[in-house]
Length: 349
Image 1 (cartoon, rainbow, N blue to C red):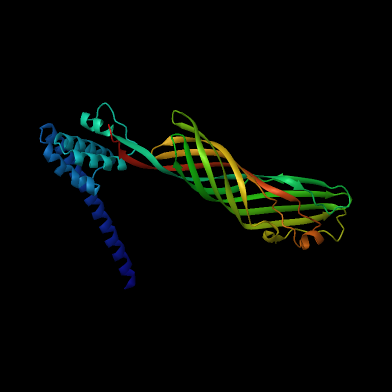
Image 2 (cartoon, one colour):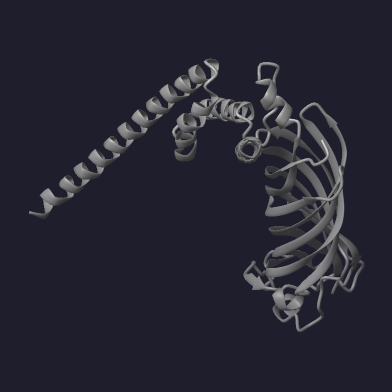
């Protein structure tokens, strides 16, 4: 019997969805007719009829987006004509909360245009999401080779390290804003040392960390829909993990000292956190309610990453010793920014 219960439930759910969809379509059709009736009543001079026709559909969301804009403009104009000025102000605030980026046109009602120009819509805060790639580079290196001869040491970088973050920025003045965020970042580098007449040491380290940056953002200029900006600040980084692989290949391939890589936890040999400095520049392309962005950013470490401790297998098994170094990142990201607006009436106008 159970096999007949499931189709029955599915059929009831499908029937409910169909009925809900049909009710929504009928509600939209009814509201579209009410909008036409409200326009007709307004043209006949019966402005007091407009509120009763439009307000229920505005409250219930029965209009399409285009119809909603038209209904708000008609309602505000009717309230002005009916000398319901306080209600017109309140309705304009509702309209601007729903459509903060609306710009008046020559076709708008004169009363609506006049009242709209008495209101200001300013960004309250901007919420950004970014993702991209890190490029690792090291500075302040102090070589600590175990070789008895002058070593041949090379560092190489792996650019495909992922980063992602979210950020909140608050406008301070017309061009200046402050921002704070939190993000995830990975970085890695490859070390190779040729020990003359002995062998090759290879060491790859990968770090993953949480970053909490704070910065000031300055708007350089606007060019159509494109906004260019620069930023500077500082931040705090907390290591989540530090992993490494090492290998030693002797010059004599028959030598018993051949070592292949194993996964090594290096977190205890690295500082747990540090302050970093940051600088960057980018561009933002305006889209409805926000921006699409691209940014280049540099993060400069301020501390030596290495903690001298018992290196264990690294020194005695792989013949590797940590060089002192500061960790720095060059970063390219793309992102999306959503703008939260605050409409308000300008006094004194």
